[in-house]
Each structure stands twice: as C-alpha cells, then as structure tokens.
Length: 78
Image 1 (tube, one colour):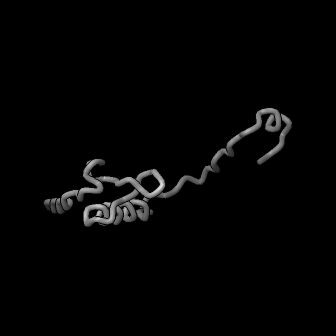
Image 2: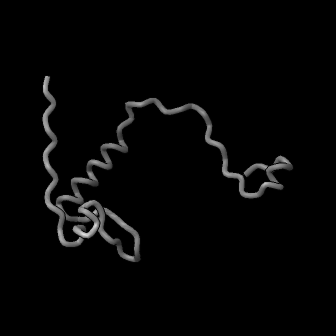
Image 3: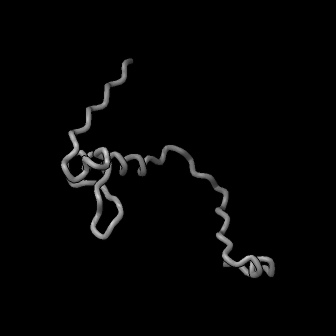
C-alpha cells in the first residue's frame, strides 16, 4: 500500500522567515515557535513526536552529575 504524501507546510511569515520558517526570536532572547500557521503546525508535530511512547524506555538508571570530585571520592551523594 502506498503511503500518503505529507501535506506541505504553509509559507513562513515575516517573523520566522529569517530562521528558515522554523523558529522566531523570543522576547528576552532565545528562539521559540512562531504563532503563524506554519509555527503552529510545527509545534503540533513536535508535541506528537514527544508524545510517541511506542518505544520501551530503558530501565537503566541515569548517572548523577558529579560536581565535586573530592566529595564523590569520599562517597558523598548528590
């Protein structure tokens, strides 16, 4: 069965055009998704990608960040 081609994204607005239509400059610096139709659609795709829980998560525990080598050598935990 043939897969349906994804719908093309709307054109970028003047706020996100400088960043190839992916981001816009946020207040106080930094980047955020634009509020134009293209940015709203990209934000929805981001949310769908993050909500995808089909893959099982690893059961291994993450290693804590060691900030003080001497304290870690003495057995102190964060």
